[in-house]
Amino acid sequence: MNDHETPEKKDPLLLDHEADGIKELDNDLPRWWVWLFWLCIVQAFGYMLYYHVFNQGRLQAAEYTEESRLGDALKSGALQKFESALVSLQPSKDPAILAKGQQTFTTYCAPCHRADGGGLVGPNLTDDFWIHGDKFADNLKTIWNGAEDKGMLAWKKQGFKPDDVMAVASYIYTLRGTKPPNPKPPENTVQEVKPNEFE
Image 1 (cartoon, one colour):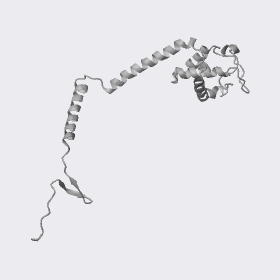
Image 2 (tube, rainbow, N blue to C red; image 1 turned 45 degrees about the vertical axis):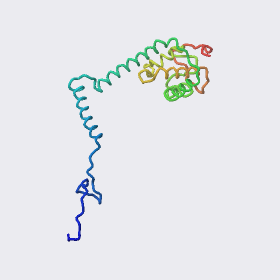
Image 3 (cartoon, rainbow, N blue to C red; image 1 turned 60 degrees about the vertical axis):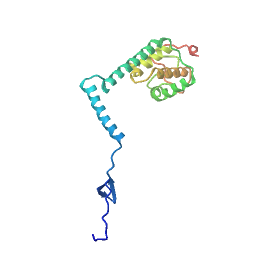
């Protein structure tokens, strides 16, 4: 450097290293951020003492177990209420419920009973002969509890809700008296259904 050149002043905030011509500034963090950082550390220390050292609160696993227990109790109560009401329920005539029942029937029942209810592996649902009883309550019980000797799974064990059972059983009642082509003949164990009983 000669006498005519003046030394370049260095910005005290600039660090010595750079990348692609960009220099890093050594700015102080805002005071509120620093205080928040220390408060988080203090809070974490307090959390550890409260939950893990002195065991004053329930951890997430215990909370989950308790919530699951309460949920299971509610579910069990609702299922027991439905099962005790089976004998007095009547088929719904609500178009929305019947549409839901038809959709459920098409998805889960048609592979064994045919889409028109005429019967395949499962029995014909359109005639006047019913294996497990001719009342609506009998149908609800069969769907809900299943008939394992006939290959019918219990819907309560498959995760279906009472509303699903009610809807599909109501839809099945609309199939009675229809005349699908080539229906399955009546089963060996039969009970006669009075056609006008459900109209």
